[in-house]
Image 1 (cartoon, one colour):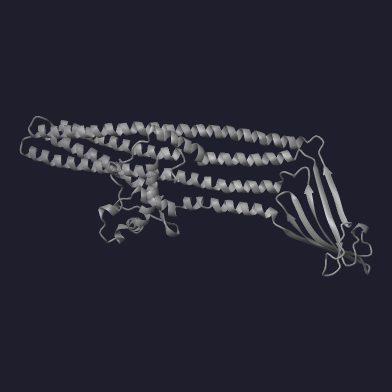
Image 2 (cartoon, rainbow, N blue to C red):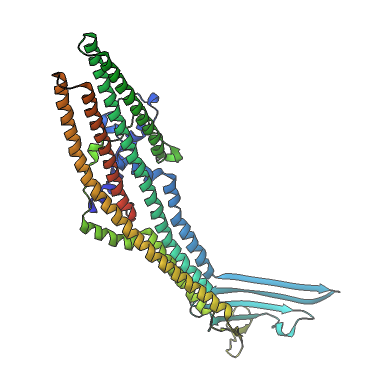
Length: 485
């Protein structure tokens, strides 16, 4: 596992070193006049992932999750911001001032459900309500309001802030999941690109061999050594192999376009892979050993702890638990106590003449008799928690089984790759022996073609197995949510 992770960590360094040459390689061949060495022609997986990391729009989109989460958190914290208030009402009618009422102050919400407040009232008028009567210089007040029943342990503002903190953590898991899926898709396309290119090379070589053989058979026919039907058979072989080569070339061109979808550069400029850039050979990419059984158990443990999908389930359960506590608070009676000290405005020294005997207080009480709405809301939240818990258990099982599935697949494919490597070598020896017999007059053109077809089929199958093997290894890390390091 450490070796696999190290491979993806090296892409950062590799990408920085190759960025200049890689950008040039993606440019049009017509505008590129400098010679290119074989080493700079190959698009490596490290370069591919480096370009995705730094320039792909989906990665840029995923990076918005974190600042979005921070914005939600900032918005929720705004519920505890101190705020000033004021209102003024005046009524003039029939040359009389019915009333003039001014109220201004400051309120400071706190985390513990206590709201501190202070303010100033100045009221006057002929028809002023008696309860609004204050001294001529106005009246200062300072006090607090607190909920002793519903809202004592949890209220909407505290619940919103806690959820916002969870969303900030969810944003990171969403970002990892999105990039993890993008890597998996890109690497799958990358390996199809390698496979199609290597198959095209095999068919191209097969066409060359068929053309050389046709020339030899034709010369033998002209010299009277072979019948004319042998030239016809050689011609048919060329035609069949050209058709296969053309189809392989078409597949390679289309896969190249698909892979170009993952390559971007600065200022959202898309890059296009041209003929200057080629895939690596399949033989150079058989370096990763299968994950061992011990590593498999470690990988599953890491996945069950750090997989972004499971982390999102944990965050959702935490948010539902906050919601449950808020709904449980609604089962309590609402008891709000307000208490304010009163002080007449005496100029610059507000505290002069302060007395605890001047105050205003009150209690607000309410409680629904049957609390059916509140009990229903709480039950619905409990159902959501249970449903989410079942979903998390199912997702954990799916992730574990998906990891084991890729593990079994890569073990089987590795043995098949080794088996077909030996088969390709044996078919090559068989073809070489058949050619010697043909030149000595002990074989026929039909047998030569048959041996070549068998070799080509084995080579194509070997490339297919190597491609599947590497896809399975990438799938193993993707299923564990660890393709993004």
